[in-house]
Length: 451
Image: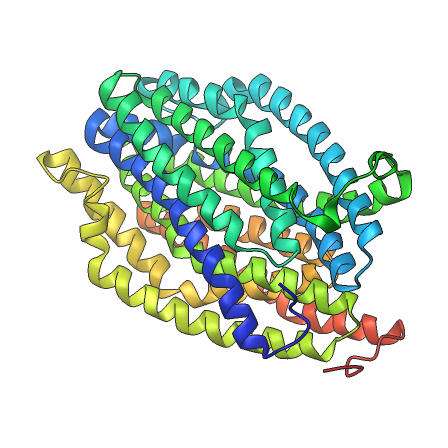
């Protein structure tokens, strides 16, 4: 899909829709994982998953950061119609992804136990958490393969194939959840194994479609690792991976504070955090679309279209976030009931905590959507350092709020850590966009060169 011609709002919306549907299916099997664990295995098992949520997201964030960073250069070369160079970028990205996956797997498996201790994970759920992490971290190469394949396709304007892959994976994951957890009685290990196997299937599906693309017919020379190209790719990918890692570390500090409030609070907090991905689904999709849109138009030298696209993306995202806010406030308690049984004092208390946290996040959702669209536009323009700085701002705000607010407002204070993190990032990103725009103009690229 060529995003350098046509109305920006229409292109962004229609490019985002399959991505959105794919993200919804991805969240669906995450939600089913949580629902099966929470309803079948109980509050302790649900808390065990929640206690390692941010540790899991740390590795996933690093993976997505590298692959999305690599895809920026792919989108630029595709927009410039430099197809030979595009193939070299893809091949070098594959090699770098293999190396990154190996390092992440070894590091994650080696440090998992130590990190659980640092997070002050309650003893009664630590063994369950560790069993889940061993399988999830063992599947890091599979997750890297899917994210790279999906990033390649999105860089070329193809959001439909990752959608189909995710639909297939979601159906498989849900089926395996019931088979492994309910049928075989494998507990949280069964939920983890189902997730890894589903991701593997989606990766294979995407790579099969990539192999059919004529412009990506590789020759042996394309697979030669080029130092200059590899360095450029890492300069794009490493800041994004670091950004996501810093954000995740902040989340882990929040989790450490949450762990101090007991298993019931952890379970309620976890239920809402599992919906976080659903709240963020459209924002993430608009972000992917914005990266591809800005990258392709930068490659084609059509910079005025980037401004128009950003404006369109912001309008669409705000309206979307307000709709989701209304749905969560109106139906959030019913949705949370899928994760937590309201029977018994523990269940009622966990559900009450979860709904209070959900309402706070839902009200401030437009702040999160502004973050995703603006950050992605800057990344698509080839600057991944300033978005990384915004990630550091998120870290400072999130951890500062998590450590300070509970002292002032008890457990209610922790609910505002996430919202303040979003606001901190926006304070960096909005002026950063205008700074990047000015730098491009100073470098001789006329912002109004082409519409």
